[in-house]
Amino acid sequence: MTRKALKIWFPWVLGVWMIVVIVAAFFYAPPAQGFKGESSRIVFFHVPQAWVAVLAFCVNLVASVRYLRRRDPLDDARAAAAARLGLVFSVLATITGSLFARVMWGSFWNWDPREVSIAILLLVYAAYFALREMVPDEERRSTLSAAYAVLAFVTMPFLIFVVPRIYWSLHPDTIISASGQLRFEMESRMRQVFFGSLMGFTGLFAWLYTLDVRLARVRMSRARREEV
Amino acid sequence: MPNPESLIWVAAVTTVIWVGLFVYCIALDRRVRRLEEGQ
Image 1: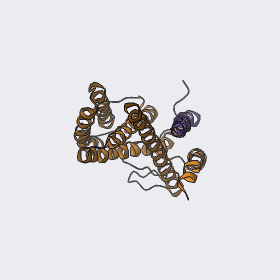
Image 2: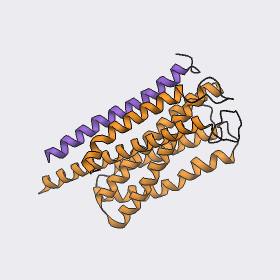
Image 3: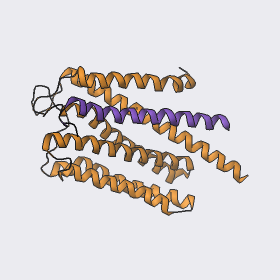
Image 4: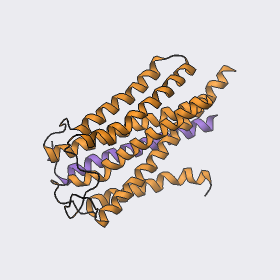
């Protein structure tokens, strides 16, 4: 398939894919036992959003390291695009997570270690954009924010994977079971929907990221032309 | 506020998030394409 055809067909394939996933999440997959109401269905969206946020922060790290090595402004644009998406998907994961918390634990916010750690992570990456806004010189801004991104990434695995496992947490372990067992094996229909959603959200991330980078490329070449 | 345990409420929130992101992507895609063609 040519690149042009991919650009045209990808949005429609992704759109149809996610319509199927959404319908399947509510009418095909069974609700997991041991969860109140329909709350277990939120997991089909909440976990992929959290996964995309982690993926985006990893891309941010790679682009930042590449910028520090090659000093290519496009790498800086790639890093910023990835961090922006990481922040957006972290916010979405927090929203869907708090909806889950409201159903399961009676309150949108419970100061659970996982809630606190995602809030800190949001602040860490919000500071990345505050830093970018504060430095007017382009090259200096790119260098500083790339260095900051490397440091920020060090906190990410600690906040997402370590802290919630050190302290006692209300948050369920990664995956839920239709049979109600807490040592988590997913029922096959749930697994299909879960991985379908994971692929859909990853596709959405790839699309958003590519668009953001293309937009940055257009802006850069326009700025270069204006300079000449 | 609807009952947060209901299927409708959960479906509405998750669908609104997805549709919002998708519509934003479509709009951004068009904008980027227009800018690229204008170059």
